[in-house]
Image 1 (cartoon, rainbow, N blue to C red):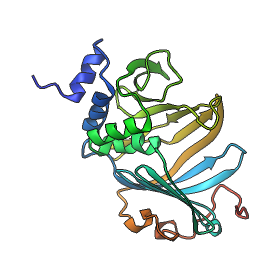
Image 2: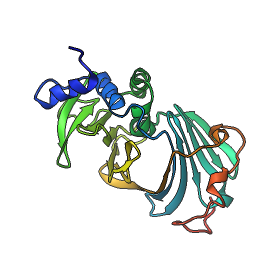
Image 3: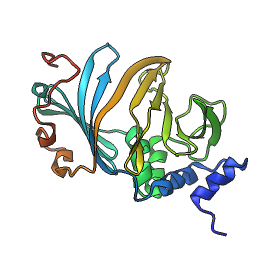
Length: 254
């Protein structure tokens, strides 16, 4: 009998051993192979720790590409994620270029689209221990935790709902302030093409809500101008139009 990734998880459902992280990644990919949306845009309502609201115009091309333009247009603010790198812009000029392990992009999208071996390699590079797994109940549903053993809420780890194999929780140590580890709750999934799209991400630091992200106006199967993901001179993508500040203050400039 051929043992498939889905069969491994089915065995675990019947009380068998929890598969390792590599098997979980393979199963998450196999479940949605050829079905998960790979190109889309949305407007994100972002509540920041100081109480400010911002409008983020977000474009995604899986695997590994994401661009966020922050309204209003006159700020010239943007973030480009290219796999493991982050480029930030302000006042229409490049501000920073850095290595950035974007666990959210990898686990919300790439895990279902990219070759599983590549996803596992990157997750190891990000600091997840793929050999450590266990099961939990989270918000009334069974989940598989990768990166930690039972009782460990300090190690870097991601939680996938066992049925749909989608990300519902992400825990990461905070190197800048060890007393305030990141604990993100991903909620409100809705069907999106052959996959699922989260509607809300609640990011906690040290147990306190630090950032709230809400997805609005999701558009699937978008034909992107791929040049907008290039980390060159700042240029406002055509799809965002005037980059209106829907939720924030239209006079805010930083």
